[in-house]
Image (cartoon, rainbow, N blue to C red):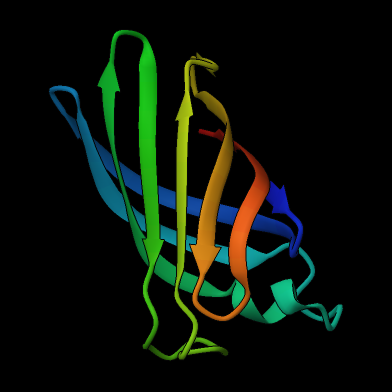
Length: 114
């Protein structure tokens, strides 16, 4: 689950860790896809997740490119986070990013649980 100024979102990640590298796919959906907000449209995306685990910190990059068959195919979204708030089956992080349709994201937070 995550949230930023556009609203709340849910994530489903399928990741593989090889050494200190993390790669995989990510699906993002609006937590409330019928509320009529920008987030209800711009947060229905498929993309990728990548990251590096080093010195107890996890650096993540999520990329939801423009194109595809989602509801706003012209809009892309990137999210970046670094955190050491990790426990067995749980990652919590603040994120920043940008959307090609709405601009900068400066206040995001997410919690991913296994």
